[in-house]
Image (cartoon, helix red, strand yellow):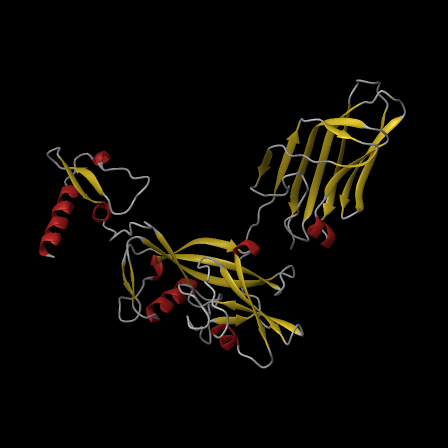
Length: 386
């Protein structure tokens, strides 16, 4: 131990005396606690373990940086959150944080949203414990609130919610149902919802789980405790500052010719997508897929019709939602053969339940077989559900 401490002291002295800081190695990819070269004041290279150089503790060679998520129960969102998380940490059994671990303490709030079966949508605030390493919990030094740094606010959707399904007969306790149920592995970074089918479909209960997520849960594994779940059926929404959800647009263009028959034709556009706001509003074939019910969208479609050789022909563009014609326009093909027509249809549309569930597709009804090319579609989210 003495020799190790001496070696580290010598290393620290060498680093302190570096006269050319740019000679410190720039690591873009760490693979375990490998040896790295450092220049001494005399210009010689010495090799030392990377973890010692950055003074952050040992690095696990199999997984350099490990993210640890701790869900904090019973947060009162009308009070200072950092203070409550610090008190929660101080009350935990002693635990050690290594230099290769990043701890996130998660405060989950619920807000009303009828689009979710439980009636609530979850919002997570992630607070980073900014100590490089150390021992924390009961009997250790108290956590300073300024060491809890808010990193992100996440509005959860289906992709980052883990739902665990159970069946129960009245009366029951959620702790008994989960603790004697099938073992599951919690996704540490997800919001976990317990969904309980009560009395063979008579009702459904929903619980937000806010307990430990670092071990399997269920029969013979971690047993959840009273106070680690929140019953959503009778819960009240939490205070929160509204999250600014982005508006924006997505468009696609495809120059390839599509041949239409006489009658109705589904129009597909598989070109490269462009967007503003990072939103996904079109599927791979150009079908419009709204983000949520209650939004408002603008839809714009255009293409070039190669005029047929026969006369007195026409085409009708229409926006179709589950077999319902939302908007349409008919264009006579008055130009002569070989003289192309540019046609288009635009509309501002509310996203009702049918539109939200089924999306919107573009069709062209043609009086005769024609070709179209230079297809373009744009979907814009211009109003967010309130």
